[in-house]
Image 1 (cartoon, rainbow, N blue to C red):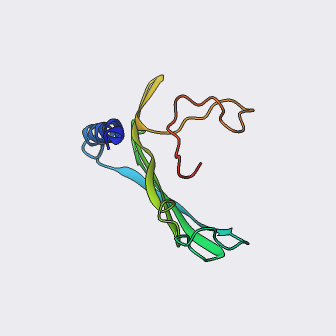
Image 2 (cartoon, rainbow, N blue to C red):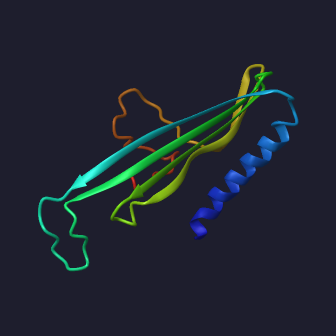
Image 3 (cartoon, rainbow, N blue to C red):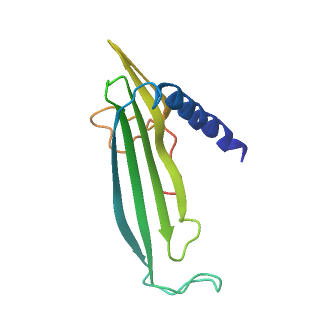
Amino acid sequence: MTRRKPRARLIAGALGVALAFGPGAAPAQTVSFGAEVGGSARFFPDAPLFGDQVSAHVSPSLILAPEAVLLSDSGAWRLVGEGFFRLDAHDENRSHADVRELGVELFRDSFSAFVGASQVFWGVTEVRHLVDVVNQIDAVED
């Protein structure tokens, strides 16, 4: 549990900045919502080796990835939130929820700053993200 404290502080800081520069700073905003919904299934042709394993040959799961963006009409700031949820029918270790992106981006004349949690990718030929020291990796999905 001590591993999650820095992430919780980061998210709390992003929300604090969002409240400081957010709805009180500009009376009107543009809000957009979206979500990706999907499913997957794993197929196991052989019987389980151990008695405590599930004997189902097909294990389906449901995926939901919601996204919300709040943009100030003045264009001075943008609040972004993106989550990920997986519900697996048989494997409780695959069922989980994660915050993929949460933060506020501030725009000034020739300067922008993002405060919060986000994933950043760079390099055109980087297929597998072999060198990725910036992002936190979702070990359950990897």
